[in-house]
Image (tube, rainbow, N blue to C red; front, side):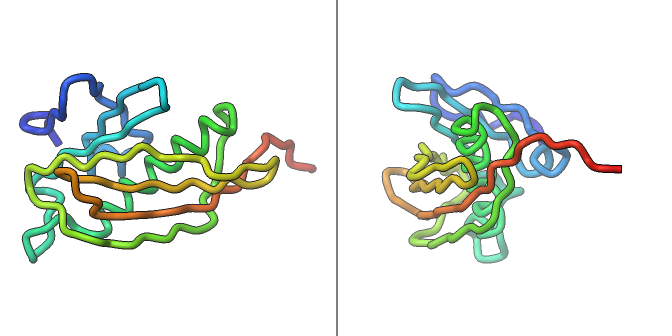
Length: 143
């Protein structure tokens, strides 16, 4: 995708994709604030479903990305793996909407992290979500 027509509010910077899939569904943006990172996605025609709203799978993929980055930050940059995610769709996002989320790590231990967030477009909560992440530590395979 090109960045044309997909730039969110001032203060956001392009956030590089972490792989081919994220490159195909972005572009994503991020803003560092004193309260933590804020993530944004401008909904474009490529994100739409046949009903004229943002595809639920697209919003779920955005939630996964946002929560993975929050979990990795809480895990001091070490890798994490998602164990579960719960999504509640409350309203539709439309083409041209800026969807924003500031994720929160609710609980953490040496083994797991719980992350949640509200996804807001035009001042309306369109999605609430929570996810459970396993913290991964580097290990050596035994021969």
